Amino acid sequence: MRTAAFVIAALLACGFLASGNPLLAAETVTVDVQKYKFVPPEITVKAGTTVRWVNKEKRQYHSVWFKESGEPESEYFFPDETFERTFDTPGVYPYVCEPHETDYDMKGVVRVVP
Ligand SMILES: [Cu+2]
Image 1 (tube, helix red, strand yellow):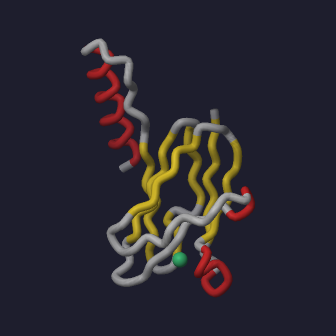
Image 2 (cartoon, rainbow, N blue to C red):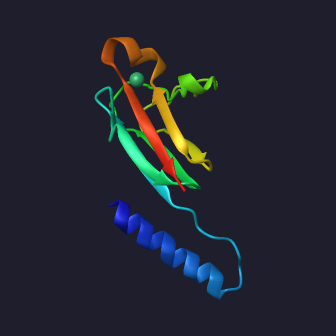
Image 3 (cartoon, helix red, strand yellow):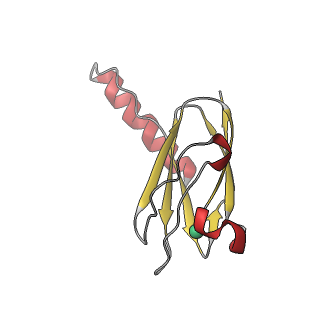
């Protein structure tokens, strides 16, 4: 799936270049949020990638909170809703779901490489 998305992004980028538009299509990677888990819990992406969390629950809301960074928590997102964040700077970005961190150990990591 990720490969397919990348190929599409690459094709779009070529199209933009061919048309003289300098805008490059950035890659987007999806993390499913299901059964009180982030799937996959750890991902590695290149700098500039947008990560999109998709809530695949039937009823349950979740959040994405980069707690250690001191940033504010995301709004709760509900089934079929998404949360997105773009990672421009290489580093390790651990996050938790604030309402379910303690009871469900609901957490994940985004690793960003140059
Ligand atoms: Cu949650």
